[in-house]
Structures are given as structure tokens and as C-alpha cells.
Length: 459
Image (cartoon, rainbow, N blue to C red; front, side, top):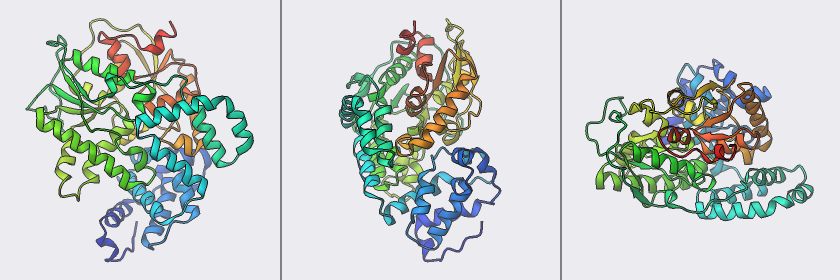
């Protein structure tokens, strides 16, 4: 794509990066076939190619964002299916993130929109605040009809309704798996595994049998059993697991809302926390059980590429970051001695895992090795509509995508659904009675752990 940025504009690193990305686009349109919003609405402006044209016009002409562009960029899920499809390697993620930051600087949103965003930005990344908010949502659920009657079909009303609908019936308090600390390996592991790999796929030479686990912000509140199962499994494999002091939200939630400064503050805290652990005892990996967070943590090196104080630390953190399924495949987790019951599992591949991190086969391989009958979901490349806070901010589109996903899952006639992202688990779970369980919980069960709670409830 031809661009016409001035030399003065290109002195800005963000614009220079955006210009490089724009130049790689060749207008081919392959991205439209896998873009969820284009598939649903058929509007070119709601396709990656259409958004790229609008972003180019805004940035090239140094224009403040207008309502039309904001509408179509807001509708983007950041599912990154377009990046998997693009034959030219257009890094759409960095481009749309830059556009969102530009929107935040130059566009004044309507009051109701600003209000809901402020609520989400100040609540979701902080577990204690999130628990308190969920308690309020639980108390407010009986009044959902009244809220709908008062707010009607307004965007604010729909968003408040979506927040109430997604609130779980059970709210978990803090436990040892969500607080800073260390969990030692359980003796000498009987399960023999290989050394973890580095970014080039080579076995790491210096091994500490010690890993850090991202606690996360929303996940331990919604389902602390995921991190609990991860710690138990890793301990049995001979790894010490560290929940680093000072680590918190990865920054993804606010980053995708254009809040660049807040996102970088959160990322900076994590980089420093993990760097202290690297210096103290070494880390073989930084493991993440929420794939949306994993995509962001793996991008820390890019985020801080121009920060003289943090760029080296950030690059090391990104190099060590692994999705839990990716790590377990890299260490060549063997078949368990006792396989699981021959249950049929519909594997939902989270967008942030298959498109954002390009981890596509590891979860399915591990589940099959554990004795489960794994089935791919038709249209598996399409998003379920979760996408961070998208199911709150764009409830109509998210609802359509969820229902489409559930209908496709039903075609596989599964006993349960496996997924690697808490947002997807919550979103899909709101539209089906089929148990949906994190991949690592099933693997923990296969390798000597407890049967997942959601399956116990069905027994």
C-alpha cells in the first residue's frame, strides 16, 4: 500500500511503525473471509482491510478520530484471525492498537460510553475491586428487568445487561493459588520430561526447574481452580512454581481499549516482578493460563523496545513467556500411566492462542495423549465474541458470535468443551449447558490430580 507520511511525521516512532505495517498491505482481501464482523455484517468498513484504509487516512492526514471510524474500530474484536490469513504478514495487531491510542487522544466519546469504560478500567484489572463489583452484580441480577425497562434498548442499557448476565453465581475469594508465594516440587518427579525450549526451539541449557505463573486479574476471581490445577500439575512434574510479588494484570484489558499509559504501567510492574525472580533463582519459563494475557506478555519486548531501562528485561520476559499448553508440549509431556475416560471433547481454540500466539496443535495433542476423543469445532477460526471486554462493549455482535459458536460446538456432540482462555470459558458457558473446562484442568486430572469441579457436578 502506498503511503504519504511526511518526514516530520515519521520521526514519531509509533507513526513510523504504523507506516511500515500499512506498506505491507497489498489490498488482497484474504482477511475478509476470516473476519468475524465482516462475516456477520458484510460491510467492508467492518473488515480488516476496510479498517486499515480508515486508519491510514486518519494517521496520514493527522486527523482527529471521527464517529464513523470510531464505530468500526470499536467493532474490531482484535481476534487477529486476519493475521493468520494474511499472505503478506500485515501486523494488524500493532496497527489497530496504535489507532485505538490515537482515538483516545483525539476523540471525546459520549458520556455513557466514557462512564462504562472508566468502570471497566478501574475495576476489572484489580481482583479485590472485581470481587466487590461481582457481588454488586449478583445482588443486582433480580433487578435486571427493571434496568432493562428504564434503560430500554440504549447502548448503556445493553452493556449493563451484558455485565449482569455474565456475572457468575459463585464468587471466589482469595486463596493460596492467587496470592504471592512459592509452591515447591513434590519430590523427584516420576514423569520424565525434556528441557524447556528457548525462542529458537533449542533446549535451554541452564535449568532451575523453576517457573513463574501469571496469577492474572479476572481469572482467579472467576475460577481459581485453573491456576490451582496448573500448580499441582507442575509440582508433580518436578517444577517449583512462583507467584511473583508485585505481579498483577498483564495490561491487555486496558491496552485494547486504547489506554496505553495504564497498560504500560501494568506491564512494567510485571516485568520488574519477574526480573527479580529471574535474578533471585532463575526461571525456565513464565507460564500463562489465560491466552489473551499470553499474547500481550509475549509482546512486552515490542512495547518497551525504545525504553532504555526496560527493553532488555522486557525482551527476556517475552522470550520466557509460554502458554501452559505450549510449555507442556515443549517438555514432551508423556502419555499418562492411566488414561482418562474416553470422553468426547470439543476443543475451542481461543483466538488469542491460535491467531495471537500461533499455538494451534499443542492443546489438542496433549488432550488426545491423555485419552480424550478430541474434535475440532466447525468454523473454529471465528471468535466466540468474548475478546476481553468486547462482550460487554458490543453485546449484540458478541451475542451473535456466541450463539454461532455454540451451534457449531453442538454439531460435534461433545461430552464437554475444552478451552484455554477464561474469557472464552465465561462467554461460551453463558450460552450452553455443556461443561466447559480449561485444558490444564483436564491434564491435571489425567496426571493424578482431582477431577474438575464442573465434571463432579455432572456425576
